[in-house]
Each structure stands twice: as C-alpha cells, then as structure tokens.
Length: 219
Image (tube, rainbow, N blue to C red):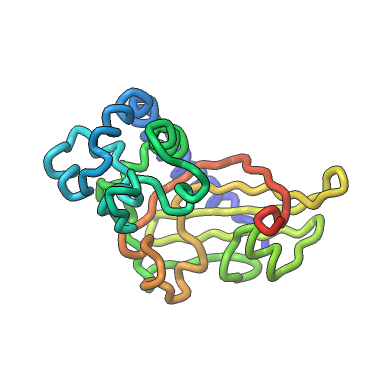
C-alpha cells in the first residue's frame, strides 16, 4: 500500500494551517502566562466565565478543575510531571508557555474536533492499537527498515503519522512525523469511554521532525 500524495498534502496543509493560526497566541503566551500564575487555583469554569481574556492560554486539559479534574494543589500541572519535580512558578511557565503553547485554543469549538466513532475512517498497511514507539517496541519488536504509517479522517479533517526505524551508532533509532488532525485508526476501535479525548475533542498538529531511540521508554 502506497502513501497517497493527495491525502498527505491535505494533512500537511491542515497541520501547517493550525500552526500558523496558533503562532500569534504562542508568542503572546510568553508574556501572558506569567500573569496566569496568580489564577492557577481558580477552576476552569470560572476562568472561562470571568477571565475570558485568558482563554487562549488556559489549557483545559490540565487546568484546575479541567478535563482531568486536577485539584488546586496541582497548580495546573499533570500528576506525572509533579512526580518528576515540576513545581513552582518556573515549572508552571515552562509547561504552559513553552511546552504546551496555545493549548487554550482547545476551549474554542471551531478549533476542537469532537470525535465520532462511526464517522472515523482510516487507511494503513497494518492496523495496530497504537502507532507509538513504546507500543511498537514492546509488541512488534521492530528492526531497521521497518515502517508504520496511517491516514485517518473524520469528514474533511484528516491526520497522518509515519514512523520509520533505522540503525545509528549501533543503536536502533526512529524518525517520526505527524501532520493534520490528531485522529488515528485506534479512534475507530470503540474506546470512546476510556479516553478524555473522546469527551472533549482533539486538534491539529504539525511535527515534521521527531527523532528518538527505540525502546527508550523501557530503559
């Protein structure tokens, strides 16, 4: 099965378009996020109701009382990040202004795509539960030259991911790229109730280059 150039172009345009639209929000975030530190314990509903100016920078996934239900003491940081020592102002700034820039745009319905299982279609040479190195390393035992990819779409919104393995300096490494909407074949597998993405929607991305060492999650 060959990669469709037309589908790839559509996914790249969607991802690049999302990146360009979010760029002004990302830049302003470097200056706005420090002020949001003072609101970190205000719940998401109150933030969106009484502080609408901050909406583009209030990440609904990790904000106090947001999609993951974090309590105020989490200071808008995920549990696993806090366990790794992310606490205080600079951790808050690093997470919201530098790592997850413009994620507050997910508060807007025109930016978010509500996933609908019966409307998701996909195209892939091999349908697997996850197209991520941790899964492929654990269950597929990849070797140099192995490639995995998919197109997945709902209506006119399409997403693409590609991961390829190669050997470098005696280690198995991988290259991956993601374009377009964050939809995958796994979203058509009936796992709606097990993922908060299904409850709140997903958005688009544009990541042309991402390198990693195979199996690094298990080292």
